[in-house]
Length: 258
Ligand SMILES: Nc1ncnc2c1ncn2[C@@H]1O[C@H](COP(=O)(O)OP(=O)(O)OP(=O)(O)O)[C@@H](O)[C@H]1O
Ligand SMILES: Cc1ncsc1CCO
Ligand SMILES: [Mg+2]
Image (spheres, rainbow, N blue to C red):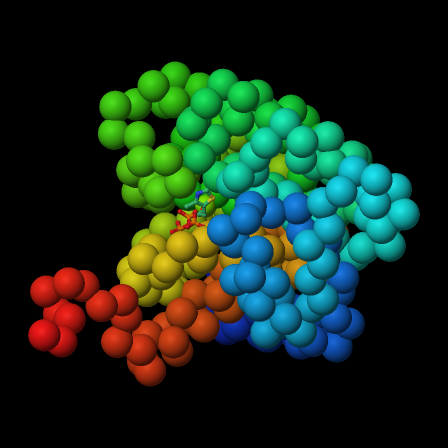
């Protein structure tokens, strides 16, 4: 192992990298075009703004030729995919900007799976999904799994590490699997991020929001998507930990005041 790889095993190195990339986002305010699902638009835009980036929810095919080349990164999310939006996704992914894919519920239908695989062939810098989504992209037979939960994961992230490595090597993208521990791989190295709180699964589109943040980090560190993705996931997880300290979380019916 060379000196740089040894240094990367040091948690202090990761802390410094995460802080320096967040500082770069704040200083440069990268413009991130988001073609994302209707559920996630607010939380993704607010996540980008809170980190210092500039979000733009621009999804018309007619705007892509003018707008996408001016962006620092592109974020594409298939959560509420329709036939109308797929051409915009294809065009924005092909515009020569670094881009990041969120394959929400990839196994939900043949249409969605084909769209994800087609987009994957357009060379995203990073794909961030939950364990079920990454497993399904790596092996379509997982799509037939009986405990399929749509946009939610029915698998643990640790059980998708090998699939993520295979998918990374076959696609050329860095693959990030979110969960109790987030795992990020370029097919050889695997980095684990242990931040976050379980409550984040109970807020819709937190996964979509962190993928948007990954796009902002890729915008300021396009030459090292593995580090960009891992640092974005760590910062987002830390934000969740800080939020947990001041929040009581969602109110279940048995806890509600009578
Ligand atoms: N058990 C857990 N403990 C700590 N953090 C978690 C846990 N589960 C998820 N997270 C964090 O929550 C965020 C969203 O990850 P998750 O895997 O739930 O995404 P997702 O299923 O794609 O979400 P969505 O589709 O709602 O956007 C990530 O930052 C992840 O690290
Ligand atoms: C609930 C849901 N359905 C489609 S996208 C989305 C947001 C979480 O992925
Ligand atoms: Mg998701």
